[in-house]
Image 1: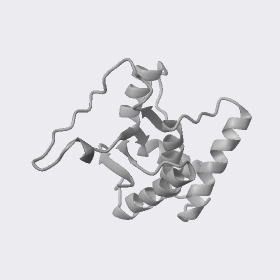
Image 2: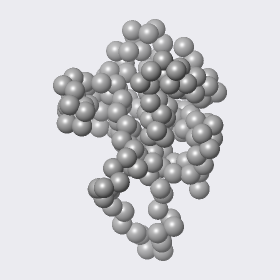
Image 3: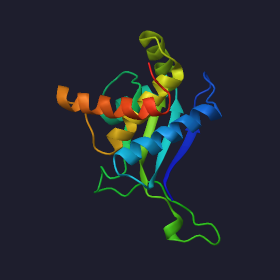
Length: 165
């Protein structure tokens, strides 16, 4: 079945092109392969600063917008996931993808950061997406060593799809 990217655009300031989605799908495949993850679904939502600010405040207690948030499905074992699938005719439970988690990206913040760092918006969104994916797999950047490890993995995946600085 492979890794699947399901995406949704909830912001109107920037167009999300099919080319960008294809790059993100390639980056997902490459990053997944590097981590030994061959199957599953990643749900990606593009939002604005206002929406991500609310989520950041609600889930992390941080009262400001951020660039990316990740919510791994396997983090809250004590709660049932709210996502329910309706089986269509002819489908069975084996047809439902294993959802790895949700990644939410503020395209508005990504645009600000791309200008600040002097690279394309596509590069910044790609970086945030792979960064979020690694968080879904349990990676973190609490210290210099773990941050360096995440950066190396992100750059490796992004360079293979041409999203370089």
